[in-house]
Length: 420
Image (cartoon, rainbow, N blue to C red; front, side, top):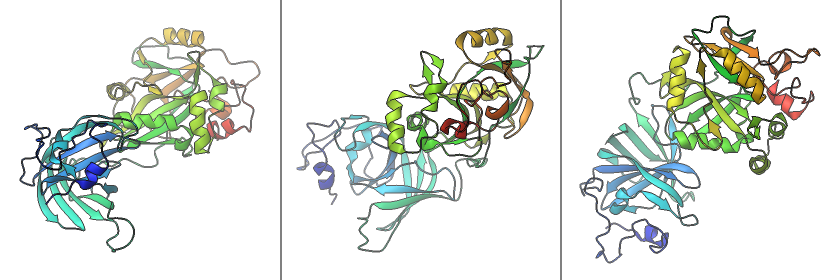
């Protein structure tokens, strides 16, 4: 007989909107014929759960309850990828219809909504392995949940499980997220004499990064391959925003003050390796990730697509939030963009040929960085457009916070990240 005692022990029906069936069995609970299992041990739901840590709850109807696993990165999209799946307490069948916000401070506090539902076939089910074929609206495929450690008395309490996909990826043409990509770089020069066929962006003064998004998590690397994920914890929200969408994004980390890029504010953030200090700095010197391009999206390489097509895909992601946004791109209007850049204290304009592919690690004439102001007579670079700042960790437009143009002294922590 199904045992929901652990489920009830963790929840107070007076403090949470979650269904908590009467232990006597007299409470009919919540009913939704379109969502609730039918009692044939063949239905499932997946709920996206924005608790203290984002995860996806996979629930399989079995023996009158929903047998549940919390999967931090979601079900893997291709064979060969094995992910953690924490076996949690059984949930009542009514939970399959639950969408709502669990109050902060309660068990599992956070927003939860239905992500997928459907039916499943059982291949194998025992205490050590659950092998099923899911037929959902979003997820289809064969998955095996298995205990990480099958040795009795290991202290794991049976919660440490893993999950893998068998046989086939999400699609026959699915390409896993690539490793080791580096940003495309611009040449430096005047704006194109013929504006037609070019698009124009602001060249932001910041730290150039590639953002690898997988399973609701973000990994940030500079052009030199430095992992700076822990330096900017507020940017993890990009992963939560994209959810299960896989992507490699090109962008620049910028600190704003008074609505304008501020090199001094960014200097306080770059090079911070202490997680505690980084979290504290979010409150005093927050940064924003400006996403300007996409290299890989949902199992497809974007490298060969023209810039205008990639740009449309970036805008379609809807990345607008407190710490991330997609700045505008302007077709055929370079002089006007340069005038605006000068007025806003932005160091330059980046012209991109509208039909250009993305060439990782290549300095290409298809991208031209044009300083918004004339070069200073001292020979120092403007916003890093030439010299130390121009290179692997240059800003998304080819600009960087470096020892030229921003007043940051050579050898500082910032210089180590922006001009290595």
